[in-house]
Length: 283
Image (cartoon, rainbow, N blue to C red; front, side, top):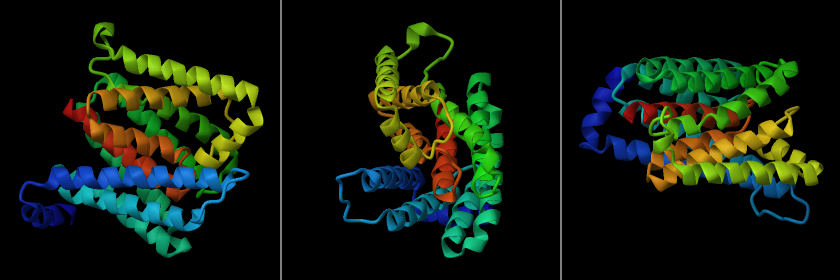
């Protein structure tokens, strides 16, 4: 079905399929970032946000699902398209009925695993390990949330944060060579680690509240949180310095999504995995 849809849609774009996909991914990243900050400000004492977090979450989920569908119908690989179509269509269905939550969770995991399997054929060992870690985080996260296995939530949080920490793998020019490392981005990541760790030690209650409300982290140690912040900053900085905007959007999707224990978090996490693997394959 996806292949037939791609054959109908792609000729209508007159070569603009990549532009459409990039635009959709960028819009999804902005929507997820907006949801993240809206939730933080709503829960922060002394701040009043004119928009309730509920509608913002629904809107950002719809934007991410639509972006997944847009990438699905424009991607050159039919299997990748099928995987992303599962993510997007079932993501939209989950907004229409709570009864679709469990099938949607299974579809998101299956679709993302399909994308990862396709990408695995062109990834090196380190990048493939990072993708496997991210897919594992998605699977465990949805099992702990939508699946009802709440005892897995601390494990899901730790694996998700370690997956976010691994995102510099996708920004590296050649992970084997220190001479080609982006040392500016690395220094930025080390600074982020120091700041998050220092603030976490100084005001642990505030740090715990921010990580819980913003990213859904439960039962994870402070060094792991700081490591995730360092990885996201390093990858985002490297992507910005090399003007790889799709890569930047992929990092933002995964980082701002946080622990994918709910569908509004799992959808951007899944789309972020697809974007990161696609960028890695194009290097």
